[in-house]
Length: 173
Image 1 (cartoon, rainbow, N blue to C red):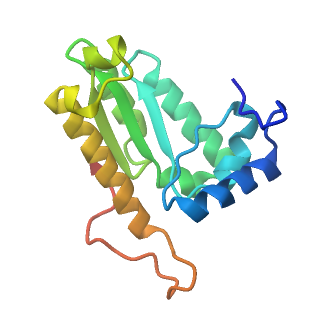
Image 2 (cartoon, helix red, strand yellow):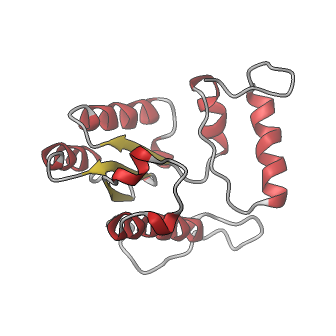
């Protein structure tokens, strides 16, 4: 479904800018999952990008196509700093996971595997403490990768350098 404003109409580019400005006043970190109609507006505002693909036979193709689209539409640099999440990893899906990671490797900053967790499919309103330990660890790793990305984003009024964490910038968890 499309993002809707208070009047029930789809959000446009100016609406996304106003939304981002309002959220930035209160929250230092905001995640937006736009409808297809708002994608370009949100991408133009984004500091980081998280690409999520299910551990499925289509994951590698979807990731490759998404990276191509981003590059073709002027978001290649943002795509190269993206974090790719392969979601629902299990022994059964491992061949698909490896193909997806192969498609993403070298085209993004980090790849994070999130294991299949029966609790998420059965009860999406579950608390983090109820998740399997490996799932909590994967989400913690994802949070760490995203926070590390914040350090690389130029801050207005800074010296202009993006900073360095001493890592290669290409991480896999």
